[in-house]
Each structure stands twice: as C-alpha cells, then as structure tokens.
Image: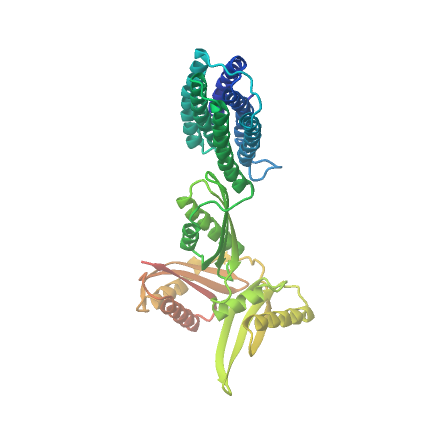
Length: 461
C-alpha cells in the first residue's frame, strides 16, 4: 500500500505543478518579446521545475525512517537537495550574466517587444509566487523542512525578479537602451544571493557543522541527572528538528553495568526535557581523581579477570618517617573450584592492580574466597519463637529503633539465619544505623549460639 502524502510533500507537489504552468507562460512571452529579463525569468522557472521536483523527492525520502543502511535516518536528503538547488541557481546566474554583459558591450541584441500581455504574465507570476511562498513557509515551519525553506527562498527571489523584469520591459517601452540587460544582471545578482544563502545552510549540515544550540544547557541538564559526577563532553550535529547529541558523563567507579545504564537513561531524559525530539547517545566513564580511596581500590580489584565480587575493603593511612603510606585489605571472591595456585595468582594480580591504582607507597593484602553457590534452606520461623522474640526485644532496646517486625528464621545445613525489618527515623545518619545493626547481631548471637548470619533491614518510619 502506497504511503499517503505528508503536508510537506503536498506543498512541494502543488508548487511544482504551478511552476510548470508559469514556466510555459513565460517561455511564450519571451518568444514574443526577445527580452533578456523575461528569458531569465523563464529560465528561473524551468530551474524551479527541476529544483521543486528535487524538493518533492527530497522531502519524501527524508520522511523515511532509519533502516539497515541508513542508521541515522534520511533527513540529510533534504540538505542534499537544497545544495543541488544551489548548483542550478549558479548556472542560471552564469547564463544571464554572460548574455547581459555581451549586450552591454555592444553586441547587437534582437529587437525587444513589450506587449501588454507580457506585463500581465509577469504581474500574475509575482502574485502567484507570493501565495506559493506563503504555502511553503507554513509547511516548512510545521515539518521543520530545510528543503521547503530552500524552495520558499527560491520563490521569493522569483517575486523580485518578476518585478525587475516588469520594470525592464516598461523602460524598454519608453525607449531606455540597455534597460533589459541591466535588469537581467540585477535578476542574476538576486539569484546569486539566494544561491549563497541556500548553499551555506546545506553545506553546514552536510559537513556536520555544530548547530547553533546552547551546549551549556545540555551539559547542565546532564549534570542534573542522578548519579552523574561530572559531564565531560557534549557534541551535537544535524539541523533543527533532526539533532543528534553525543554526551560523555562520569559516574562512580564501582557502579554496576545496570546502574550505569540507569544513569545513561536519566541523562537522556533530562536532555530531552529541554530539547524534545533530540536523539541522545550517552557514554558513561568512571570517575578517577575525585573518587574515594576505598572505591578506587574496589574498582581496581574488580577489573581483574576471574574476580566476581570485592567486599570488606579497608584502607588505612599512616605516617612512617614523614611519608604517607597506605595499607589496603580486602576480600575477593572467585569460582569455588579454583586451585590454590590459581587463587594465589589472582591475589597477586589484585594486589598489583590496587597498588597501581592508588600509587605511592601502598601495601595490599588480599583474602581470596570462593563464590558461594545457592544453598537450599527451610523456613523455621514458627519453630524458633524464642529467637524471634529475642530479636524484637534486642532491637527495641536500641534508642534509634522504633519497632521491629517481619522476622524470618531459616535453616541451612543445621545453621540458623535471621532476617528482621526494623523502623527508625529517616533523617538518622547511616553510621548510627549500622552501629545499631552490629549491636543487635552480636547480642543475638550471645543469647543463641545456633544463630549464624543475621541481616537487619532498616526502614524509615
């Protein structure tokens, strides 16, 4: 099923049909008058037939979605068409100027006539072109089409050149010699100015010149996205309505792949709020200089191939003979079937990576442990009511705890695990909450030695 014509395509097609009629009328007038000014008008209209045909094709191609061979769509087809218009306009200028200069230099021009119907055709052409310009400008604004803007600009020059041709014929009728040749040169100058304006805009887009867009606003929008530590680069290409942005931001070095993806999506959303329709690609890089030492040590250890998880990372800083030294300890997990020899090699690799990351005088000690597989367990909460009550009692004894609820006790390989949810004030600092969790865990294990892992989940009241 054929695709229906869009507003831009209908505007270009209507303008093309009207131009064909006007071109035929102007050629008839030129044949009757031998006027160079009228000839330039006829040539310009013939040119319009070609260029508006290209505009129609360009707008139709530009409306196609991206495909396997054009990943960024077909929008530049409009700019290619507009640039082609420029080349045709320059050809018209050359033809008219050469003929006009020849006549002014003394060559014998053919006799020029100025019948009344010639003035009628030129006047009607100017009025019709004004309506066509209005139609194309409206469609160009509605669809943000460069090709339609170029077509409208070309028709605006047609209005001016029709008026010039009208005046030239009027002067010829009064006996002013050379008026027709001068009118032809003026027409050529107007066409050349239009060609330069159309060509510059088209070349800028085809060469990916940065559009006039407030890059600082885009960078500020990226900075507002949650998780972004800094915005490092913003690049934009395309034309208004078909903009592509390439944004590079920095985030925490220990951010997971999923977290980095979430940050990139938030950056896209913030940018699209101030530039609707823009196609944004976000690259997330790790923060380096501003990152905490612990985070940097974890990131360096995590980069070692074969390491699946890094935890319990501690960094101690101390002075030794006036020199600042660091001591890093961390736990790293690898596959359970790893041999001692391979585990030791992984430990050396982790220590070297951390030392290289932190620089200076650094000692690194690593504990390599197996990555625990999923273990079967059983819900035994109802069988250990004493443990449940002990957790609730110990929790509410903490001054920062408001209540304890949803206690779960499970059994795995003869050892109990406890999970408890507690509520506290939402504005309390995390270190106070963590301290309360540790005290509850230790007290519970003192009362019930059969309890192993304890997880205290804090919630804001």
